[in-house]
Length: 70
Image (cartoon, rainbow, N blue to C red; front, side, top):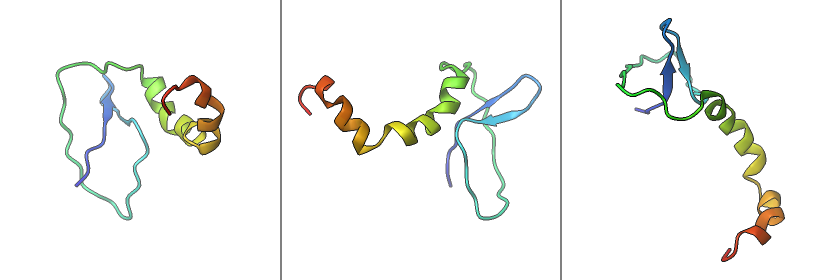
């Protein structure tokens, strides 16, 4: 079992925050939370793509001078 964050639009469309990969069709249960999303949806949707580029050893080395103690 896996929990995936999503946003449900007023028209009922369910938009996953990050990609999900399954080998075959799966059932899903949706829990609707009372609070609205707190983070800009566009920023959350781009997080995975940016992470692929930013979470590399080359990037860590380039910014190391700004991270004292590392």
